[in-house]
Length: 341
Image (cartoon, rainbow, N blue to C red; front, side, top):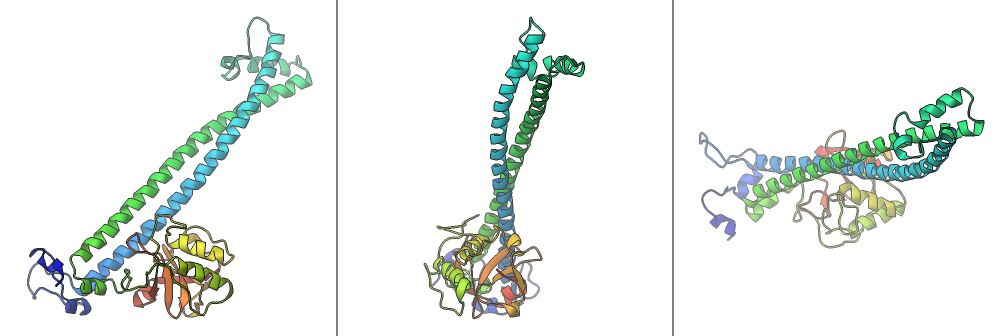
């Protein structure tokens, strides 16, 4: 006997029969707070699956933006150092010019040369009046341009750093919300027996409905680059779902497809939405082994690899490993398009 049935009268008691009888209620007609039907439980699980995928995609987009911004931040920082170094040399030249023309004050001091006014304004006036040589005028112009550039770089650095922090915050928020979806899904399943869980998750697969044993070999009809991609994907079966994972120890959905097709000689973009535009668009009936399948709305948030024979390998949520699943009515209903890389 399943020990879940010994956990108290408050536990939900769904029968196996109710789970396969769509629309049938456990409670008798007219009873308040009737337990949800098998169909309603299944719909909740499927909705949470879809919401998780959307949050995982949001996480990837924010993380990609963060990483790109951090790289830009490094480039700006390197540029800033070069600008400061160049400005230091020009400062000496301008300071020497100022000291030669106007004795009594050390205009090479940063307090004068980096502030508004100071010797620059005086030297500009001298240049306008023709008191400086062409070489001196050129050095003054370089100094002024470099100082302005340095100020812009410092502002850009501050703005870029702030943007990177925000993107990372957005990514972590999406991850937290996604994990809450997984927890809610598990809470629903915890109230069911094993057979009831199998029925409730039969559409989306949970490790019992799909093949998720550690490592696997592809034995389907793919050839060439598509076979190389699928060989790699099947070798990852059983590895955990990892937020933002691109391997080798774990993957998210687009991380898996990207890594698999890299073995097939194609460099795919990082996110599901960007991969949706990275090849020839194909319909469900046109799918060939190796094609990418996209799900959930016109801006797809989930992707898997078609293996042939109505099978797909994918990384779905953090509660499930990389696995092979059958393309049942649920996946066909949520399918929005295929891409042949």
